[in-house]
Length: 131
Length: 131
Image (cartoon, rainbow over all chains, first blue to last red; front, side):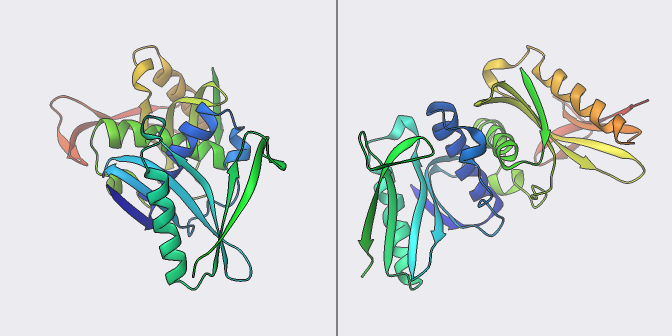
């Protein structure tokens, strides 16, 4: 497995293709909610590839104020779920954020019964020190 | 079936997701060849959707000089090939180009034994008047 952290066109395309398949086609998130105005050309994506032509997991790096990094739009290919791909993607993202001066990592994780809805799905906010 | 002609983020994501699946994962075109620097935020894509969350065919509008429009990166989902999706996408693209002042449409189509290679695959150039 290879993990690429880059805003290169191929890495963005891989990230968007996973989100199309998982969030929109599989999960039914409306396409114009899922694909917002933050997938800009300079956006960094953390993407795992099983082989160079097969992306299997991704997230979007979303810097916030106060040296916080939000890890957004996390997803893993359906056929590979439960095998630690997401953990490795998140681990690589945390390492990158730590090395670039971010102090806190934030993930909005979905839960079955959560405290507030986001894009229609209940979520819980998880916060972690990157020390 | 719905055909969307737009540079909206969701339509670009749909186009890129089809190209990732078809050109890169299925056909083996190198990812950094397939995704070039021309998928800019203002790029128009013509994308067919079976339902709003399931894109099934796409092409990229690539204006050339002399009122020529190249219809690039044409592809259709594997499971729906041979059912006229590509014809409808191309028809919608030609109509759009004609209505926007383009006089000639160009397609680089792959052939089994063609006159020159493009990105490793032999291709033939097809040109059509949009009158």
